[in-house]
Length: 369
Image (cartoon, rainbow, N blue to C red; front, side, top):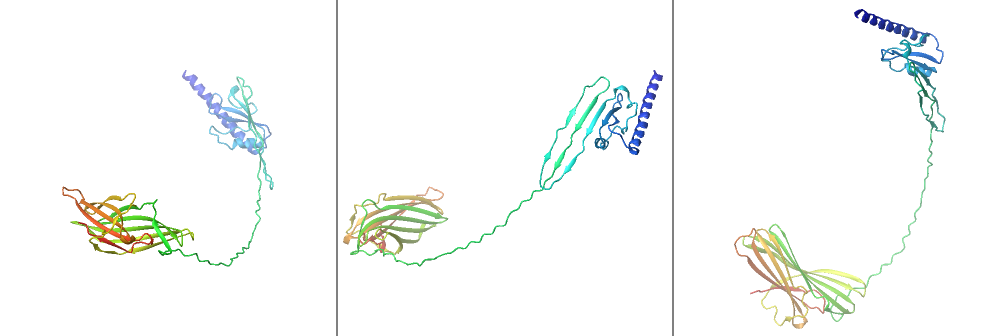
């Protein structure tokens, strides 16, 4: 057995030596003499039973494409020996055809044709197989496109004509009382009352607003909106809230239908001294605010402040009307404690004449007992 193994090894070494000598002789032949196509070569494999496969190349381009690739199992035998590639009847044969690539670049026409690669595998016998690979010709055409954008410049001339302007002064709004104009309160729109309190730190502003609507006729036809604002500014102290200032102003908007315009104006109304009996000779008016009581609350410094405002309209001698405003402030500690709250009152009377249709000229505080 040992002798038989040595004999087999010697035979394999002989085959390998023959292949190497043939490969060297084939490369030398391809390099020194022109090949006649189709040409047959022996391509090495990694198989011991079939060490070479037979390849047939139809032209030089196909052969160059093959020889330029990597050969990890050794060099090709080019051309193949006359007796065939080493390895016996189990060697496979492949026919490779590679076409020539032609590139044409015309000036402005672009045509690209891509062909399909066809692989044909003929019948394989038990001893030898043939594979044919055909790579047809590819033509690539590259074009050049030229885009021309013409230059367009348009210049326009604009003529502006300014016609002469004639200023026409509007007719004046009648603002005087009788005999030019007589006003009365609107029976369908009773006075309205609003109240708001804002606070910032230890300072608060309490604002009461009342609105009267007057219908006026005579030298003109008008509607007059008369609004009265009462502002009470206070600051928190350890014992309660102290007045900083009390101020009153009015806003009068005249809607004059005779001339089709609106005119608004503001007027500061001075607050006079305290009157002991401001309601003498007056009686309750038939026209009272639709909602005569308003109430809001706010935290001011170390106090909770709840303010209630109520308004009453009084008819007084000589056709005058007195608007009586009563503020009620309820104070409690902030944060809450067991101490009782305190209550303070403030009354303000503003007198005006609705037939004249102008704001009150003076307001006074009223003594509350």
